[in-house]
Image (spheres, each protein chain N blue to C red):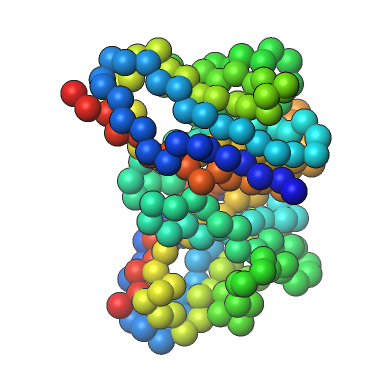
Amino acid sequence: GAVVSQHPSWVICKSGTSVKIECRSLDFQATTMFWYRQFPKQSLMLMATSNEGSKATYEQGVEKDKFLINHASLTLSTLTVTSAHPEDSSFYICSAPGTSGGYNEQFFGPGTRLTVL
Amino acid sequence: AQSVTQPDIHITVSEGASLELRCNYSYGATPYLFWYVQSPGQGLQLLLKYFSGDTLVQGIKGFEAEFKRSQSSFNLRKPSVHWSDAAEYFCAVGARSGNQFYFGTGTSLTVIP
């Protein structure tokens, strides 16, 4: 089946530093990937759509200079949290659209927990 | 506008009791429908999905869900809840193109012995 991985699974960093999170589609290609953010006890909130070969599309209210997205290849999208602050601490999940049994669906990565000290 | 509503923020059931988690959606066309479970600190696990055909779908861990077009609902059920089912449950709808996906706000399930 379609598998999406994320790396790292968790990261702790100091305030002011930048952190890069990778999202890979392991056995399929994805021209589009999606990045979500989840606060404790809340649902997933779509942050941005990553597009291979073009700029990412950000949801309203998401700072594009804070959350840099690069879709480097058909199997890799990266999210860089720049100058991270404690309020950026969250669970970040990526997904990629693929097919299963002939139907389109999203395949989710296992998530990355970011803690900013 | 597309939306997914899970009316119950939190549900508590006794172990062995039956469970029904509600999900209603608003979507322009017939969407694909999904239920996910998330344990604390973990990622999403797909429980079941509906694309077409039989409106009663079976999933993993003994869960099932029924798509009711007339009610725009996709409620999740389990006949006998186990303590390990305690988690957060998310209903989601997806566009047939695969590029749009909407989550409900989630229902937190507590199971008491």
